[in-house]
Length: 225
Image 1 (cartoon, rainbow, N blue to C red):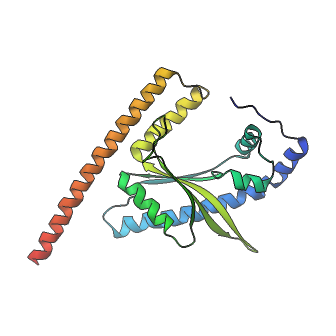
Image 2: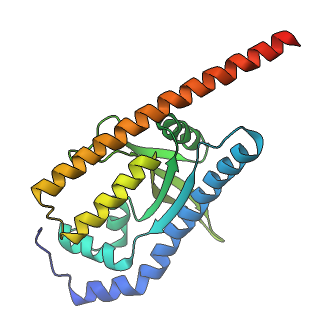
């Protein structure tokens, strides 16, 4: 386990005094992005055959977890440093049915004029060693307050239902064993990741076949008319 750096008492007092205001900006950032994503979801549900967005959830890091990271990483204990170094204080997770939908949703979010993409980590194209797959975007979005405009960073994780199921299981096991997963269990997790990937590939192929049949049927109807 990484060594922890004890924070001075005055730093802790400063942190507790200003943390509520600091975290509020990130909650507003989540609210802004959730509104955008839910509008896209509703548009597809009402105007198209199906929505590429199956489910959306959000979470805000707790002050305790932020303090723990500062202590663990030896970071400068200031809100400016926290904003610059910790990019997943505000987090949103989107699950999709198909791999192609993951990239489609990412493109729709990235193309919004007031959303700036700061970083992309494509763990679908390049999975982590343990088998983890997901597309991560770090974006910044403006938050309009009564007397100012603040730019807030939000991490968006987009993945398929199969990827999400595997990641949820891995997360529970990771903390069950206090971050030290036995080698045999780690191998089983990697095997399960391959099974999940095979399922995604198969479902994507079926999805493409359905779209092809539907497209052909539409062309036939147009010719008949």
